[in-house]
Length: 385
Ligand SMILES: Cc1ncc(COP(=O)(O)O)c(C=O)c1O
Image 1: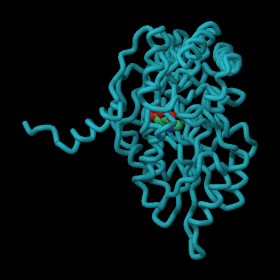
Image 2: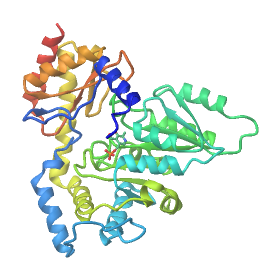
Image 3: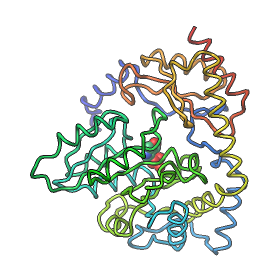
Image 4: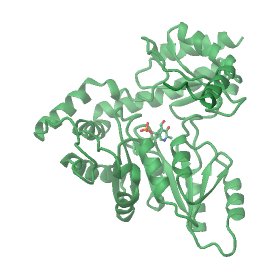
């Protein structure tokens, strides 16, 4: 067998030297401040039972999809889900992908064409960046949540002869900061300039909106958003994602999006779980879970303020609360102390975030108790003294 390639070995050694080598964690019995299971749906017994019942009611006992959705894998539950989702999100259509990663990869690699331009927020998720890398369109980043910089970058990117399309890309809740753009202002801007706005709502679904529909739908002009990417592996507690947009966009993606076409569809059980989760989120239990989560976000912020920690936390009203502790070694040490005390808080290292902006990321949940929140912040405060 050939030796491990020396160039790859050098990359791993560099990661080791920078204290940034990733490894798979073992999940002990720690208090969850790290998962995306914001509403506790992933471990909810009623939701599990509802899914099973839904499969029984439909007489479905198959384990796998058996093929691509374009060949043999488009089982009937997909049809039902793609009726439910547009009704819930008030979109014209929904196309379900196997994951949020697949949806972003499939959308951005297929939609913007050669001669088009993509302008994206500098903190955009890796799945969008990877999709953009596969696109033939030119791409430019703008400063995080800065409409002024977006305007400047747009005017620099467009020449007098430009006849292409412009796609502007953002997230409604940023995954590593927990903050949001001014969607209202972005919508007005994209409309005025004749651009297409694309919003990844991964961390807003289930959490914001009257029923958990996300942040875009709160805005009356949401129909003017070209596409929304919604994912089900976070607050919805299951797996998969959808691109919401026009019927024509759906037809286009079915024809040209490789991560949709060249992969086996989700198994019926996964699709049934998504359907059950969307019914559950509007049930009394779902509404109660969202109330608890929003209460815990407020409680966390108040406690951080009481402990005079608010200046090192990034501004955020979402379930993602980040405390800056620069330096991989420093932030890893504090995370290890919190983990020793029984709290699963993750350190986010560079290069995942820029050097000097390493951080602890607290993911808050409906199922966290007020006592757990108070205690973890008290321990953090002690670590920083
Ligand atoms: C903003 C954002 N978009 C997309 C994804 C990918 O979603 P999925 O986990 O369903 O692949 C993530 C996941 O971390 C995310 O944070």
